[in-house]
Image (tube, rainbow, N blue to C red; front, side):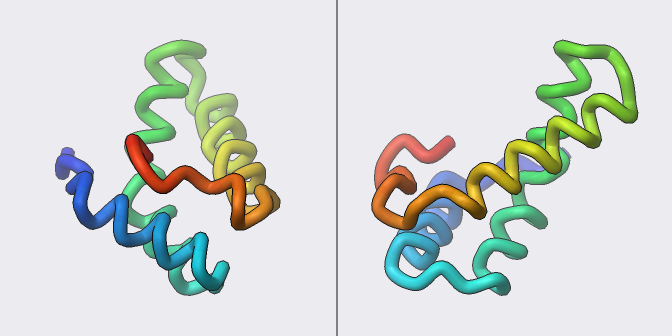
Length: 75
């Protein structure tokens, strides 16, 4: 699995905080979606539940107010 680059992740969150655009959020999903799935799977040990959890995590992040998004320690 490709390691998530902390610098890239930081830049993505800065862009989301400035102007929440769908293409930036998609970039975040593409870079971190598998990681979120794997973390969920390591806990629940169920494929479907892990996929649901991944969707819930990213949906909550999308609905989160821009000023609530992290600007440091994003990982």
